[in-house]
Length: 177
Length: 308
Image (cartoon, rainbow over all chains, first blue to last red; front, side, top):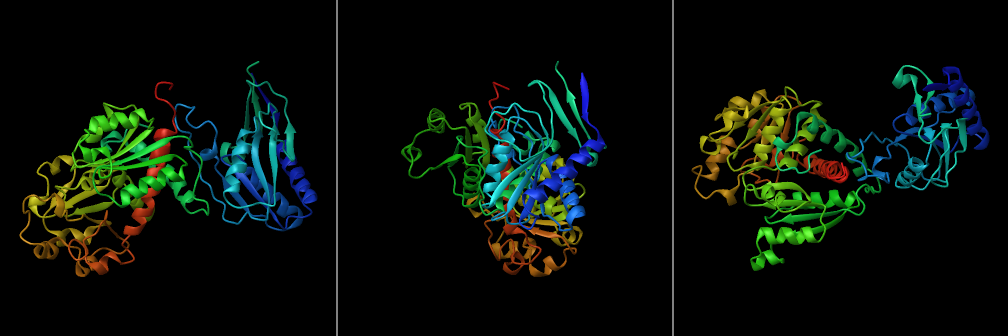
């Protein structure tokens, strides 16, 4: 059983709203940088950057972070997790870093991402933007900007589809129910 | 990934590509201010070097440390090996101490394979006799792919003492596997008689080979392995098979000069050729750390074989 919980327009509106919220909360984007978590978060981070530029004009630096080496389950799986690219071509020290990911679930990915980010410098503040919050946290982590809260069962599979990668924008819940 | 890395033959072309792609990410880690990631926290890597080595040992040590593994360095002198303890007993001792991976260099071909029969740890061959040196082969493949953008169809000459060179064997097997065209060039006494069976060309005339190359890979003249005289004199060798300034100028535009180190400047490679911009000998060393990080990560990061 699968259900589409966000259509292309919903994704677009959510990202536009988050862009506004970032501008409002951080009072402009002078010190703001976006860091997307591979491999869907980086596309979302680029979209957010384009939205922010469309709304207020300034260009926000975007980086991509691969958290594989910081995972807490290395060695617990049969195969070593596949690694992706990390590219942060700016100094994060003193900046407000908005981490961008597709789905917030247990919070373990975000924990890894914060550890990884600290190895690049000392951000003034780290915020979290996600397209979907599906609950079931295992760590004391919450998002600052949420596209949509989607109640799920633990066994459900939540997939975010991105036009650049998957050909369309959508959020799909594949239920075990 | 395979449990052990003893030979280039342990890897398929897809495995090689995976190792090189993973190394790409570790190159990026090496360019950070903090060049360390926690991927292998709590694992123990033993560097078991029974033959002299600078770059391979240091490279493996750095690779393991940058992955946050615990590293134990172990050489023949200053250990019980010097008191006559056998390889087997030494290996069992390392096993009992809970080593997750053993990186071994040994003067006897096949000793890493022997080691796998005694221990549960992952074994990585860091050079065994005149057999193989697969991590060197992989870092060379990485360097060529990075600089020239591909491996398939590359024209590579491996020049010099192929007979005693484990580097030449690993690199040849790897290049052939990835679809490159390999020519072994050197005096007939230093080209192994079975070389045509590797899928490579053989030439005894370096001047004929050099103008058609993408990569000129110069091997070290291994004085320590030459029990017999394989060529009349070092001067004659340098004249016929050394990469001189004149020969290097015959290389096509954009081609690379490589050497596994340590170099005998003035013998197999002229000193000013080693310092030319197209010589990527130092990059080879830097890439070696990333390749070894990738291998340790892929082999140790995959969990217990029995559980899987």
